Length: 534
Image (cartoon, rainbow, N blue to C red; front, side, top):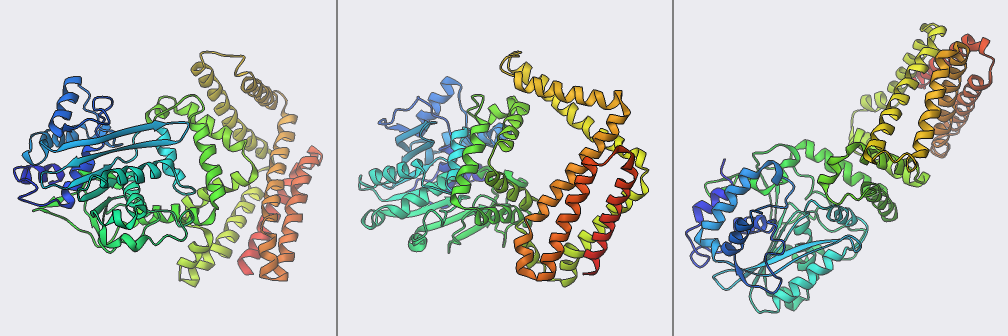
């Protein structure tokens, strides 16, 4: 299908004087901005686009820093060949090339200015590259101003000072930088901006910029996003000139600009975004609305501290040792404060429901569905579990608990061996993990050596489960108190009932396990029936 490369072939013979700058030119040059020029171009150098490509070809380093480059190398090679040979583009002068990556300052910023033959210029900001500092900076947009925004603003001010009329563009994070810079330049400077093209880019967070009139720049803005869109929907500003375009890719891969379909010189437009991408947006935005900026900051800092624990610097580094990365994230989660865990827990819940519980129920207009989701669903589930406990022979319960233990121990053992191998068998550095794994293995072995201990262990496992369940129910006390006195009293009874059941399993004599299993089944069925009829 035709895309921006096809457009370059169509229009490549026409100068900007013959055919004025368009949104397709913005896309073409924003794509070029992802090209890794490295140290081949100096910041104060003036170089033609074709000469810059020639230097890259001589170094055999024609690498695009867009995330889809690895799987679309042929498409990018075709794009580069087309733009290199097209008279419309090849003689464009590139100036003010800048590329900054600073882990300590949390900065990933790259931009370049293209001088067009009609006397105008285009400022193009690069989007997120493959560095983890760049990804962390993206997350930071949700709770603070980031250094890249200030760099983008100063960059645009310096370019406008040259006196040329200016276009501004950027893809993904680059579009967010373009929006920020266009909004915060002085009005006199903004008068020199001809247009801003925001290419599938997120907006500015209202929590960070609560009193900013974002639509002051609406007449200057054209926003383009693919049918499956998650990025531009984050802090969406609902621009007057917004296009939803068709793509020849699926899912999140539509974020790549080379996938946007052009037919006979125009985009193929869609009326609305794909429903599955709307769900993903709801997940992100519901979570952001339900957690404070302080909670977002803590979550982001913890996450990237874990991701970079072993010196990882790029997204591709994470794929080299996925087990180690997963382990770091897991350790970080279990070592976090209760408040941080709750923040992560909300995100997990939204991934299941597509939004928060309140919005999920509110969205479903059917009273019948509300009934299933609340009382009926919970009642049936608890009743079925109760029947299972009553039907399954009591002698089998210890083996069920042991099976669960088997999975846990196997996972811990494999993880420990893998970690040792990755750390070059540093037994001293991994001594705590090794000691814990050995302890778990000894405990596991004792289950099978002595059947009586297996029975006792299963009682403890089920007891701990019900105690934790009682603690979880206690978090609903405030809500049930506000709902009605009866719900408040029943909530207290449930907490006491499951707490006592848990304590019984932990401390009761092994000879009473049959009574314990019968107790679980009875309690679950009774509570399930109540939820069904209340």
